[in-house]
Length: 111
Length: 111
DNA sequence: TACTAATATTAGCTAATTCTAATATTTGGA
DNA sequence: TCCAAATATTAGAATTAGCTAATATTAGTA
Image (cartoon, rainbow over all chains, first blue to last red; front, top):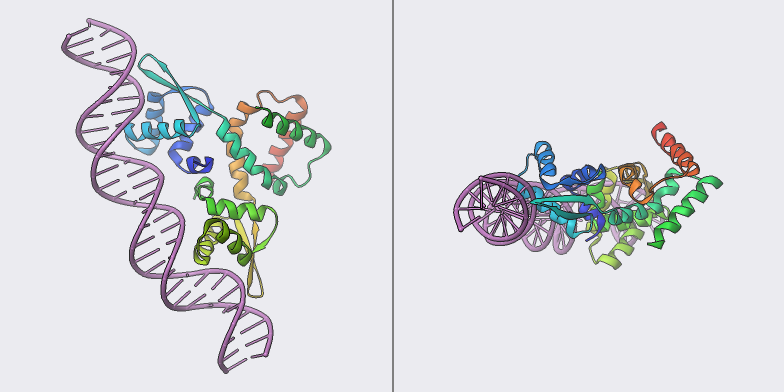
């Protein structure tokens, strides 16, 4: 499934925003999402599964809790896709910026 | 409509990829998309409308042709959203990179 | 072992999205 | 003015995604 298909859902985006700030248990995520979207625990759990299956998040067990963490790989795909548009808002990169951008690109293809 | 909702469709993404390389007429876009996705002219035209309405593309008339161009504003929204995850793949920016990134951010909020 | 807390799964409904087919609109040229 | 080319629009059908309600699973604890 394409990265953008996953990010098309507002609940999933919100979950990823939470995970961007650090690890969170399923329960913590449910509380926040439930408050903001008014959906059930089941619905949140289903969205967590979508994020896991699509490689946007990983889980580890901590007793009966599931601790979720963001998995950046798929988000970098989005960042890469945007490359082709960056020329529109970064009209001409100066030498310094080019150097940095090149270093970033190189790193990206290493792993 | 959120930027990611628009980018969730593969046909729309493909159209934007074409527009990233420069302006194209509706007909040109139809030819490419039709070849790759096997959908009708009508379907492509409808997707072009979605892109227009959502502010991802602009049109100008050239005789009976409609010339489409990418409108970068909405794509920058996506880029901005990704900021919160960049720390995951750019663990620590050096002074040079920070300077460049800061300049970029400043420019972004100006217009 | 029995119970509770935390989380996941399944089935089925609903609403939204995207498509096709048909038709309308607009422009330029004979 | 009439026609053809290019493109857009509309209505309706089909698919799909995301939800609820109910239930299952798993781990810790008395």
